[in-house]
Image (tube, rainbow, N blue to C red; front, side, top):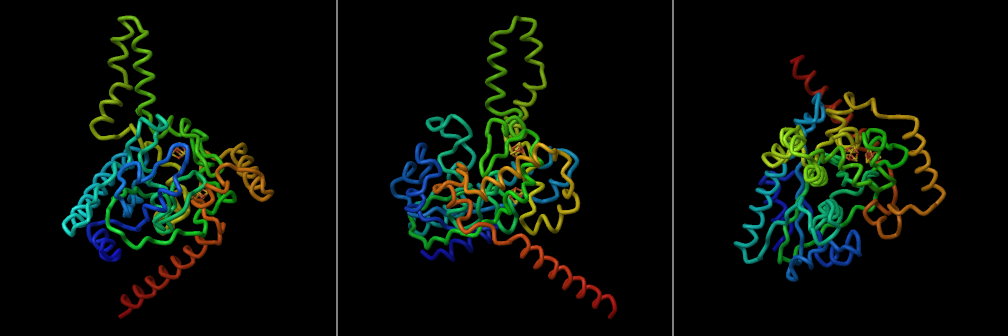
Length: 341
Ligand code: SF4
Ligand code: SF4
């Protein structure tokens, strides 16, 4: 089976990017070896993981509140599942058993947090589609972090893509994700998941269990009041449409300057970051100094550097912006020539 054929199917079915990771490589490089998220824990027969990416439309990051991005997240995830299902079916028809992973589900036997059977961010990096940002989202050169991913586990032995060794994230001298984060969750190529969840999962699992605990302790009158609270409405809405249960906070996605979608639609609107404070600026400076001085940083240790981009930042965003402006100038010249005919 040719990798190019599978990629063509994915793009024709609506994926914006597609790459292939070798199951052997994924098995040898679990994101956290203590809690391994590897294909061999799911199927001993998996040879390749086809990773597909769908972008989140930039328009939602220009909206006045978060509801549009929350709803589009859900639509994007549904579409991704359908595309992945189609690819798995085509592979099966040709004699290669294949199935789709649950991209956003937690394996309770692992960390009891937001921790799936596979990490889609790591799948994407191993499939050559991007590298980690400072906030440990995957940054694709094309759409920055404004993407969702899923993986198709296949018994087909497909030619894998090479990992990107150049750091796509500008790094500490940018730190726009850190400045924008309302809950101060962005670490140094790491994330405080609990702090992030307070904004990104307002009606997520931890909020639900905390409410149930308070409910059990409360008296009858208080219980009645709690049943009719905004929290319960939030959980109901989350069950219906996912809205509120995850992906609630778009800030670090909206402000990241990587990607042509940022240059085209977000640069003006997101230039100023209202959440930026002197404290956050001081933290970014401390991160920069720590890296320059070679201080131990867990997000940049030997194991994690593979996903950050071991060659360091080489100016990918500046190159991208230059190419984008040249294309814009060409388009304008063509449009002017058309008008003057
Ligand atoms: S999703 Fe929101 S809360 Fe979480 S790291 Fe990004 S900006 Fe911070
Ligand atoms: S906002 Fe800047 S520092 Fe943060 S992930 Fe994007 S490029 Fe990296």
